[in-house]
Amino acid sequence: MSPSRLTCAETFARLDDYVDRELAPDEVREVVAHLESCVVCAGEFEIERRLLDDIRGKLRRVRAPADLMAKVSSRLRAE
Image (cartoon, rainbow, N blue to C red):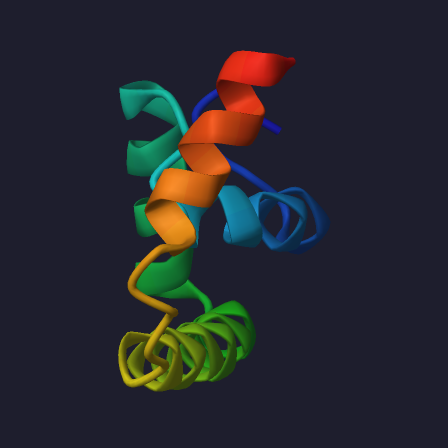
């Protein structure tokens, strides 16, 4: 395997970090290259991406109590 070519297992292991934008630029390029050439991994990525998009969309609709930020800040200062 060349250093710039990931296996399916290596790509799959990086999908969470890729979706969360936590990979280094060279790793992003490697994952993208693999996803562009592998239908199986691209399908797995699409499932994960949709799931996370759905979760993020639902979380945006949850209203937190107005004083929540003040309580969290207060507790953090206390720690």
